[in-house]
Image (cartoon, rainbow, N blue to C red; front, side):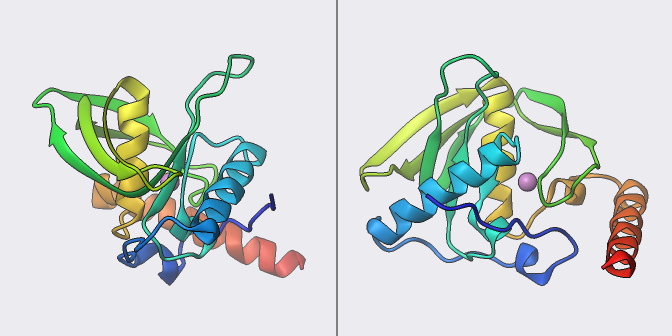
Length: 173
Ligand code: NI
């Protein structure tokens, strides 16, 4: 497995609609495995392929707490096929929007269709933080970041902070 570079906003690759996986082959499996390792090393709970610069509909998620047995999900072409009317708010962050957080309201439960690591079609229902995380990652596949769910005011504050951080980093290099 290999550690991949995580790209951060603002970056045009994070605003693209990703193309579907045609077949879960060895290259897709390797991408899933590398993404999961990259996510663990960055102590994230989810990662979408565009965050490593690959514009394919692939996500990985693992919300298990540290010290507990991990239960990673690796999904190709994930799609929400049912969402609850009930909504829930969580404070979200993103490895591509480092050091910034915001409360986002989303359906509390979702049912998601996807292809697993073996290419088998599956459908699973998620709730709690797992439901939020899966929806956040699927958003990435359509070029949507959690900041796009915030008010324009909050979003602009975060974007300005990211641009400033980037200028400081560029000046230090
Ligand atoms: Ni994210």
